[in-house]
Length: 196
Image (cartoon, rainbow, N blue to C red; front, side, top):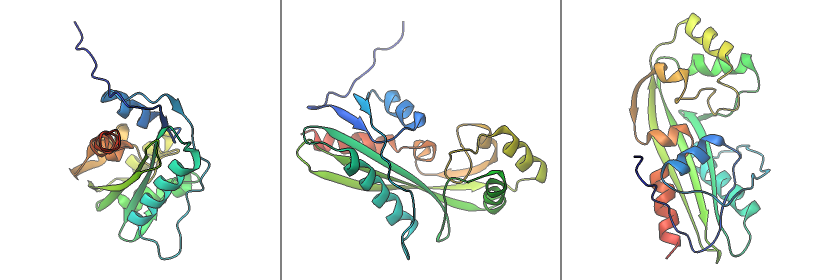
């Protein structure tokens, strides 16, 4: 007999400001079911001299604020993959995806997850979760096969750790769900905090 699900009871409807199926799955995993999905239309661009961490937090907040209405909880999130001070967004094509993977090969990078939760009364919390991921050295064939899989599409840094790229990961330090798309520990604690 399956275990019963523990559902977070919020005092108002919860809106997810993201179209990411991975974020929905992660929230569902911990019993948080948004009442609606309302993706924002915010352009995911970096400001001049903006750090990857500041960018992730700013975009998460902008996404949440764009769709928030009084009387609702809204959760906005953004994921930035950073190598040093350089951020790797979503690759525009296979050529760029290949360059990203070549850059990540054999080295460590940071996955920065910005999260913003806005309460029904307008109070908000913004946080960044940082996970350090180290890739093994990737062969030409491994990169070519990964590009051919199309898994890189619509993924920050051009990879999905929960898919084939999981075999590239030599070491991880920090939140695994953050690399998938949402630090569910932070998201849950932020919602709990604002629900009181």
